[in-house]
Length: 199
Image 1 (cartoon, one colour):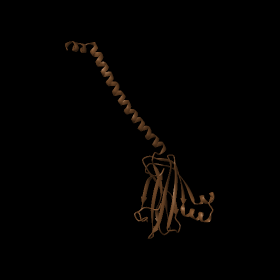
Image 2 (cartoon, rainbow, N blue to C red):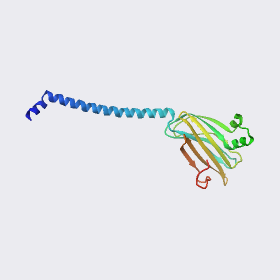
Image 3 (cartoon, rainbow, N blue to C red):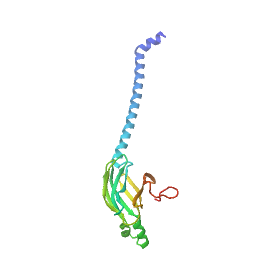
Image 4 (cartoon, helix red, strand yellow):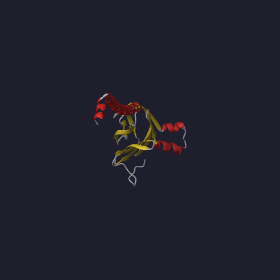
């Protein structure tokens, strides 16, 4: 036992101790490198989201609706944790499309008359801005399908509007790749017998 202790306190022991400490240091350094690599990978993902827009999106709504003139202010609203870039929207008026279908004039020019294209540009996180006046006409039901394109991809919105008791109510749903991103339905918006909205 004394010989073993003398060996451990001598040069062989110091070499063994150095080897153990080196191994511990290498393990610690490896662990720190792994943690740093994960932090860098997460930072890179966040940078990509900041550049592309990540999972953020926007939707259109019509604010300040006047039941006497049946017009309001078309407004764009941002949703999500990142800015979105190069946004444009094509608003398709479904009532106009039905009129075109009845006339059997489904050519490009006629179809484009049922569409309004808006260049929105870039939107900061949490931003909202007005686009301009939006007349709804004399009907009591208005339906729009909206097709967005942005740097982070394509998404769609269904906007449904009804005038009930001299008040306009709205329902909207936004989806991307068949996944619902957002849904907002006024409490007095008409629903089907099963409680769902006729999108």
